[in-house]
Length: 410
Image (cartoon, rainbow, N blue to C red; front, side, top):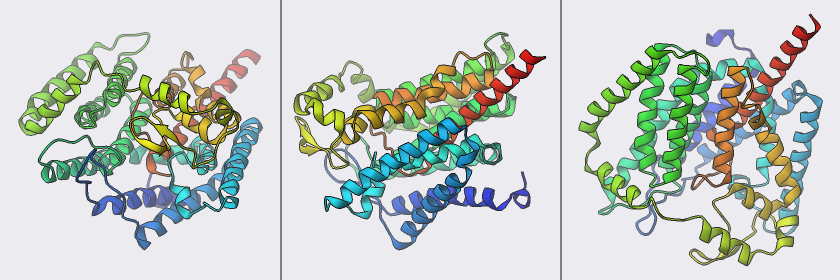
């Protein structure tokens, strides 16, 4: 689609998406890695980057509010209820005297309930149809930026340290979420298969460098999804399988000459972690420290507990559902889960487009459940892409239901 064919709302949508991406780039452009402990970096918040973030957030929320009417009435009401809950907890934080502008950027902040409005943009074809053609640009750019940050870690550290919240991980998630979407929505042809296969190989390399078994597993899951989609659930397309295997083998042979020793060192570390259990102790510690009533009613965005590994006033846990319930209570958790993950029930749909679109939503469900590390739920490109994909699932489901109704009447 040519730029001059876009209407004003589509241009506003694209500009908000690009502005959010540039904000992340500027924030991490000159950021430095920490020198001790786990490797992390803090974003540099400049006036320019904050203005981009503010423009992106304001424009996409206002546009989403305008397009909310396109959703079925049921989902309009549920999303507006979620927005009310988010604003309520922001008001509580303000009245408690602890509110600051940084709360809006906090991981799993009350603003995340407001972000659910973005689902309305994914529901409308006019926005989805201009998103898919630009995703193949987002993926390699995000992966290049992720790799550049990783290289600076190798250059500035005399020993390998596990990279956590950083430009490396931020851009990796943007690229990987975009790859998930493109893998199940693009046209099935040789060109797209070659592109996806190459991006999956890069995903494996970057995932290994997170030192996270779960992120490696997500790349494996995505590989399986791609194979199923190209082979077909009903009819084998053998030529695609052969081509995919050939691409993977060729890329491995070529890429092995450029990886270097750093990857081999990280591979040994990840392989040595295969029998580690890093979740059970978190859950035992969490439930020993947190009262049931605190989970039922929520403790606000500043909720914390005593962690045996991370000390007092620790605010996080590798399970988004528990984190949400701890901060905002069980009812907001149920509402959030219903809106985000209802598409999971359509995985077995006979409509192949709907089924595969919902499979990646199920993969996000696993990420929320704790099959991941350092998952951030704030306003960034990865979050926008996920919410747009969920809206697209609802759109495909309604379209499929209308076709079924018409056939039944005929």
